[in-house]
Image 1 (cartoon, rainbow, N blue to C red):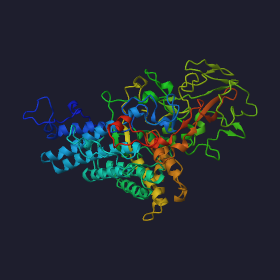
Image 2 (cartoon, rainbow, N blue to C red):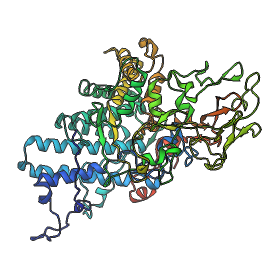
Image 3 (cartoon, one colour):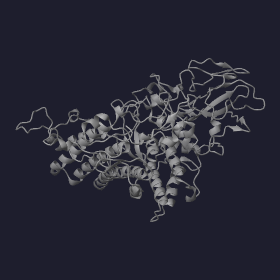
Image 4 (tube, one colour):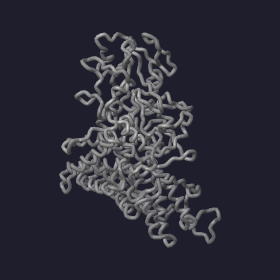
Length: 637
């Protein structure tokens, strides 16, 4: 795909209209005709509003909001996917960084375009005008979805509001019902699908982008209708929080039908994939996030050094590959996340198996524990001892120096939150390690080059480091906070298949039999699992409950900033995060055995995650509430 770079006209940022019409406009004011009568002007306007889409990409954190370098509170560290030294508990988005205000500014700019573009339609072909109008409606829908998934029902503003105005009450708009907002989103996306072409420039919407986003938004609405228990009704009887359960089928069907529109238009990335070849499947999954010609990419946000950059690599590489900025290992996958994957030795309860007969299992190499794991795991998570950028990533918790006669018993009781004993264990408090002299000769750093440094709580605090989206060949000299520019894939075909599978499962569960929905869900899940190198489901009967699909979704979309929203729409976040301490896996080297063992335990920091049920609907900024007598706050704030 050709990379498109737009020069955004700075004078469009503060677009205003005059209160009075003058016979001769000031020469330093950009007029509508300067923009709408040229393709360059329209392209610049479009480039700006695309750049302001509220997408949770590389530069997002719930603590800092959109478009920040996100070393503080990475998104995955509130969803149970990962632990971070800068995040130690659950949290909702910082209300001071709420996207409310910026979203309504963007909606106003879109409305302005929609109202004024038709006035200049004669300058262009009908196809051009329809396409631009469709793009604008797509952007408005995506922006309203960003608001709805946070706040529920919000004010629907479908036209440019004039201020000052003769009637101030025109600006005092009440919240629409949550159902009305999702219906408004659906209408905008339907318009976009009808009016957009099948292809467009990279980073801009085409008709299938609109359909894909509809599959996502309507799945969210269906989940709210089925699972939400929170309700807020305003003085007029309008339900601004909550959707009637009777609408669940309608929204799941809309999601399913929208996903069907992309069939045979996109496909899963399998350029390097080969059946039965785990190494090829691993490499294929790595490659899919960096191949700009991928048939899986539906909608992306491009970065390009030096004008548009982020810091993903700098914050997340293992410590031994740290760049000059001095950052690393910000995102450390939890054992809870890793245990979702196939091919790992497991106990009957699904937890990782690290002992036999009450004694630790020993391994020659740390990666041996994961020898049969599905390749998608290695492409998502850096496992202890695995190779990245040509280096074996050394992750250890310490060196065990005690006797192993008769086997090594667990260092701590099951479920213990205590610190590891100091007897018979050599540890490192920081990266300046004192090498330990091994029996028989040689030395070893207790924590390895990327292991756990107990004094400052850095490096691989979970026993793992994130792999997904790290550039595999970026030189250490370029691993800097302002140097990463890999593309963010906001929508890919794998998500559409997962949307389709989940909607189909829910429709079957709700008694819909106009199609073989359960069989369809089975087929889509197996497409995902085949590409991942996971164990295939034998039949639709293996879809014993919705969690089979949900776990597949969490594995496939891990660290793509989707899981947090899924936990919220399923209304399970408060159950998963109920004074929860997430689990970690600590590798130890047994000096006398010259082998490794693993200790599975809760996070040593004892960081507890508790999701407040109020957070299913976020706090509307108080400043916005004070502006309007009709704008009511969400429950509990």
